[in-house]
Length: 122
Image (cartoon, rainbow, N blue to C red; front, side):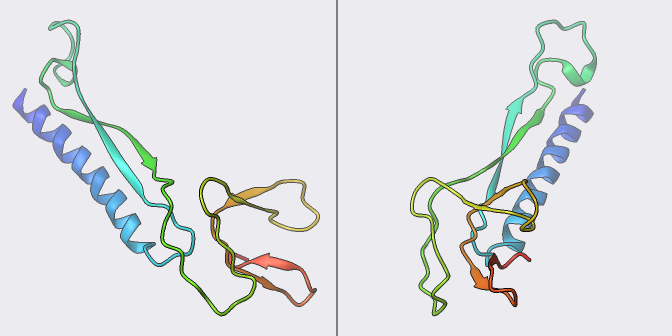
């Protein structure tokens, strides 16, 4: 039973380390919102269940939650760089003919060769 407890802790820690790595890799990306790993205790209502589901058998990852708190606003020299203050997103289309829309908080925009305002992700 202690093996399962230790293994669940290691697996949960591995997930958290992946989340932290992702946050660090994108720390300088415009509009990036960090994620946080949430944990929960593994608790069962019966002691006759599998060892991985018994009371006191460790921890599990409840989920990765994206944090939407307001980040720092940084002034730039580009007149088309915008920021969302508070809640909200910019609505962008993957291409001009598409009816699909995507949502982003990355406010880095520029004018392309066809004189369309596009986001920097293109």
